[in-house]
Image 1 (tube, helix red, strand yellow):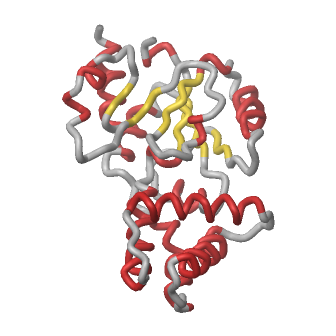
Image 2 (image 1 turned 30 degrees about the vertical axis):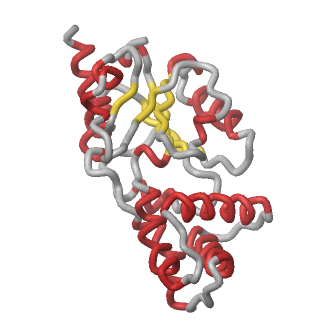
Image 3 (image 1 turned 120 degrees about the horizontal axis):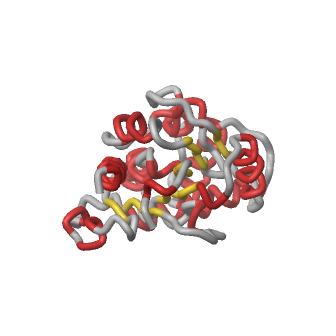
Length: 228
């Protein structure tokens, strides 16, 4: 595969936003108060479990209300009495989770060649708050409120005059990334792991594999492919 053969890119939320860093920065103070020792991986796992529970419970809670409830459940799990101010602070934090430094510039470049589609997490995210912080407008935003979000994607692709085969999914390595399921065509993966020099690996230097350390590397691969 070549990145230049596609007409649209479907970014999962975590390829643009450092969601795990935002979650951990909000939950570590709670973890410090707990008599239960929890690693970062355990905190992230607990976050995802509780988020799924709240999602299955239904309702139309705002992103801040959703995360406020999540914080209180997490506190109960960690045997900590949650403070109201802390719950409110965590509830509003998702709107300000850090954007990866390379994302704005890479999106500006890629928007010249592709239609840009955002696949949001199923619960608790203020997508509008994110899009206001980015320098480009997405051609479509898919908010998967259930497992059948692919049908919403198909409708948006039809609106944009695109075939499914013309869309290249770009996923993160988060365990609940929406592209981890039901991917029936090539997918591009961003391995944003600062602990390992992924960008020096053979995979990151092979444009046909479409595995990169950052969105900037994907943009660079596109530039290279144009001049190949």
